[in-house]
Image 1: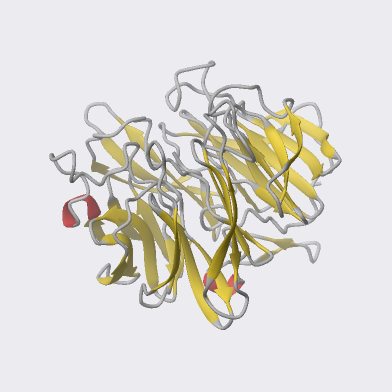
Image 2 (image 1 turned 90 degrees about the vertical axis):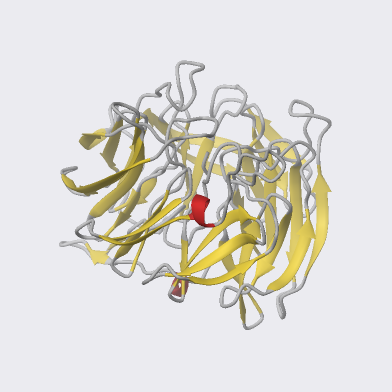
Length: 439
């Protein structure tokens, strides 16, 4: 399971111009977009859907939770096949036609729960694509040709999954962190002993630094700035911590030991010098960042009695969205909620965005004053979110749920879509679809 206010200098983003207008068309080269914060800045988009979505193409793929990414006219995604042997695949398609550009596969026996396929999104930067498989296979490709530049079996190299159940550090659902590229380094949450977070040289794969002894979980790190210092914010299986992306030095750490197990999937949400995290069993925590130096203080932590009697927000898969002074997210059983950011108090709850069910999911993307929401039923919703409520402008189904990711409620669509080139790229366990969203 898969699953942030950043400066654009942290990532490489390809920019294109529409042939007849000056509207900018963005790429989506990593987890949750160009700056890892679920913000989509393209203009010239449709205002509402017609009866049917404008499907540009469909491409057959296997199962997996890995959300697609888009860079330089290509779409990247990972999947899994089980016959005649268990393999993971990294796939690359042409963004305009869906034609296969290249693919790479390798044997990969799963010894984890929820075996639908890889979790992490492929990250693309500086002409390279970086994939991270569910059992810890990290691979660097030439993004154009698919040539393997280097690869590392992190499970083997760092003894993540071992026979001794006490010493085993592999999250029960596998490795899910989407690689983050910073200043020539690939940074991952790994969760190994004395190597909770590791940075590798982006060109060679050599270890640059490692930090913390925290257990791993499923959240992907994000970057922010405190004073003149870049800070890597990681939500691990034991804490929310701020590290130097240069050398792994721990600037600050707030302990957050889960009462059941490490289960955090959502990315930390950073806004207005605050960090917000939310967990299915352990509720929500708000942390205040010192704007002048890398120190923090905990503002509030709210947790309900259990997964049904919740406080604030007990989210599982989806990363919430922060708009002005309020936070919007999906609670443990599909309840869309609005929280007052300052206090964590609930302003309203809505049950129309996605059917109520355990782990029910919506992925949120901000575009101007609108929010685009992709729910687990395969529906794309254009809406506004405010303290006054959830207002649907338009909604349409763009892809069918499938059952490999979850063999309940006639299947789900749990993978985060990509929004790029005025299109949405979404996947289930059988296909990758590109839908035109231009006006």
